[in-house]
Amino acid sequence: MFNLTYEFKLKPTKQQSKIFDEWLEITRLVYNYALAERKDWYKSRSCQINACSLHSCYIIPADTPRPTYASQCKSLTAAKKQHLELKKIQSQVLQQTLKRVETAFTNMWERNAGFPRFKKKGRMRSFVFPQMTGKRLEHGLVKLPVIGWVKFRQSREMPNDAQIKQARIVKRVSGWYVMLTIQWNVDLPQPIPHGEAVGIDVGLTSFLATSSGLLIKRPRFLGDAERKLKLLQKRVSRKPIGSNNWRRAQKKVAKLHEYVANCRKDW
Image (cartoon, rainbow, N blue to C red; front, side, top):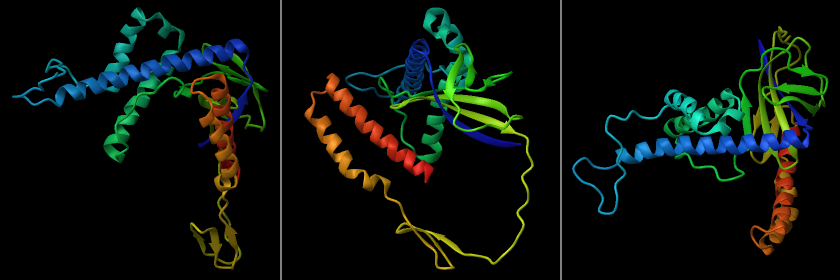
């Protein structure tokens, strides 16, 4: 089995774009609630047994178990009865949001990534459909659970016998994108040794140097765009924060950063 991820730009209707934005906001609230539940539990356990703060002390019953991915998924079912907006979203999408909270704490413990932080409005930029069963793809169309068929720009061909395993919807400054993870049953040919061995060294000053004398310079995509970036950031600083002109200037800065990221990806 061979796994690949293809990225395409979506062309959703106004109604579908509205649904995407609504789902991002709801998943952001679910993420923040799950994070707050875990944070409160840890905060309650940080107080000493024989002493409390003079100002306040957050207390949770001692027999309350530590919130986990499994326990929060169970509470999600009960929360749907009280918060009807949760029923609009596929359950697996909400479960994947809770999985992101679990991953954030795992990275904190194992990789010293720092304590997870809350996501303010606009910071949740993607959600995942972890299972894509049945026929989900036609030329220029992808069928998303609950949402239905959405147009996309098929800029490259995909293997006909490949199976779509997962889809991630991503919001960027240039629009909506879908990242399709496919599983392809293909046998990779074994490399045939030929010619002479070449030593390769990857460095910082030069991107690549070989024993045959080939030297490839390191590209400076951000450095080349630095002058324009300074100009755009200066324009942002001159605008009243929160105004429409400020948002438009921020969007231009974000587009430039996306352009630099695409240059690095395509190099």
